[in-house]
Image (cartoon, rainbow, N blue to C red; front, side, top):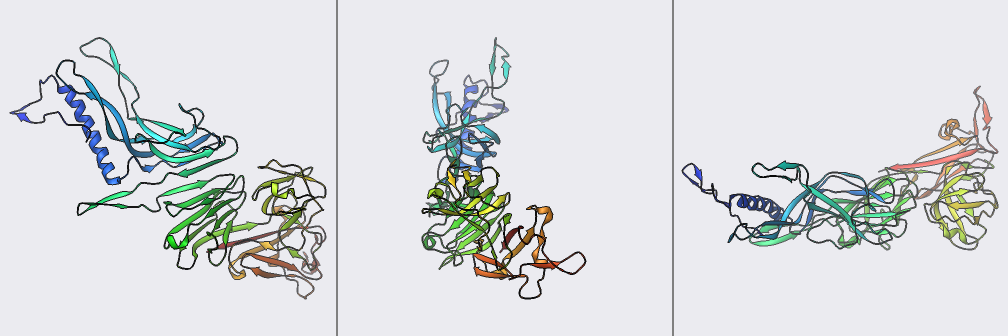
Length: 498
């Protein structure tokens, strides 16, 4: 303990022994501080590491790249207090002591990182999001037997900091934060503290596993789970680009369970094994839609999927012919090798039409190429048109040829065979959901008509049209060619739920 009790709680008859003592008020103060410190020391003893976050305190990006949100939180840290020291003369001298103090902060919405007393450094540096106990004067109280008034605290106060200063015993650290104030922010939950158990007079440290979450919002680099990490649930903000989470070394993490979920859609989110380590026999698992998720467990030979949900959508893609055609995703060839200036998951826009797509993969070379899935527009690239990347800002790349579907496969990366993938193929004349026709309900009859699904692998399939195109029923019930057989659009989707 950093403080001693001074107050005498014994009685002489019906009168407290301390009553009338000229040090009574000072001893009450010390007694109050002793009680606070005793509570904090109890928490400190249980935690084994100090200071510590007890509950809450989840940090996330706010409305923009210079604000954060923080959930309600509780912690324990040091706090410096002044108190009476010696009473050789009046008034008594004072001194300062550190006490272990419980601190509680309310939820924060759009906390301005640039408006703090010591602003965050948003240039790629590592900042610490910290909570401190503080005393803030509130209301005032008029003195009963003397002139004037004094301020007093209504409720316990606190202060949030976010800066590059290394934390100390006065700081409950909630997270680390890296950002540039304009286009990206990476927030990582700070390592939780250990629980200390006392057994046969031996202090045994037991690591807490799986008590915190982390949202990946970086615009570059890959988040790799370390063997020493205690985070087990990860969320991906893919609004700017693709995000990759690499699992830790399998041998050192047998039996551990990790969950990865798409929080914000855009580019894909990929869960990847370390090196050549596999996930259900595959190198990685990719997700595209907000709410998609995967949970894996470390087994002796590889990571096994406990549950997974992934939905893939090509968007509307134009097709110039419906005979002997594999309908899949689009590969776009560029006039130069500049395709690698874009990033996977980036939104690209074609000049003039304003059509937009997301990049799923990039092939370097001269010329370069990239595979896309359509988000809006008609799924058609026009020769010599310039493309602009939303994140990279690159707007000098030109399309090498007018690009419709070129007999590709639908690459869904969902690690399941055809019998486990829920797949759909829609056709339309106008590239709108309002005029979709579901091909699962059509039947061609003769081999020259119709379509068939082929499983290429557990990550891809193709949709093959018949030699004479697609034959459907007309309104009168007779056979008829599909009205959009020469210039129509299609939209392929696939979904797995494990």
